[in-house]
Image (cartoon, rainbow, N blue to C red; front, top):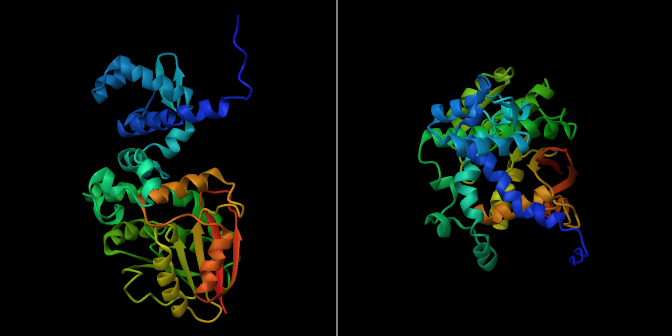
Length: 341
């Protein structure tokens, strides 16, 4: 006698049960340097195990799992990177995401393990998880190498999103862009490449400026860009008719967002603009899933949150912006443009 089938398809639940396992396979393979080792040439599991000082049998199981996830190909006894792994999972790639992946493995993996506490208390989990009173910006980077790897991981996200963000609206009337908290300068570089009459500056904390100088200096628009060290909460903002905030507002509380936006609009001339790059929640908050997951991530990691376009419009108009429009980019980050009257 057989049991009756379940009344509903369990596929969605089964997929979510193993979702974290797929992530951890990728995280582990990146952390162990497997994709980097395979980028030079296809190799056997035994060869890799000897080179990386890993258990051969266990490594074979991990490699086979990565084949199933389409991160690796298997050619006889040899394993090789897929194009996606070569592009995003190797440190020497022009578009590496390894920094953010390693940050996800080392920090986010543990923070998400304490999600229940965040829901009970409504606060980030840095204290519970690591014993720190403040989050990533003041504690996480214990070395220049760690800081560089994380910033280059965010740079990989930026290379995917920034070209679409600067094309989402016609920014051709603006003459000077200042990207506040601009990190490696990927958004400002994309803007200068798309708008030949635009000049730009990357404004970020002194600790971030050496890498920004390196990345911007190697870009084809370096002659129209400058790097300025400063804190956008306390220092005078450089003069501009267009400011940008890329994945900045979602880090901060409502009060701090208002304080920052007030400083920006006070510095803008009439008709000046603010370009905001954030992932937009749908107006009915039913999606997209990427924005939902990032919203929960912000709860765990920061004092901020993700917002709908309507919520950004309310926030921006509260400080005096007269016109606000949004655009879906199809990339990990969407775009909002606000204009001062």
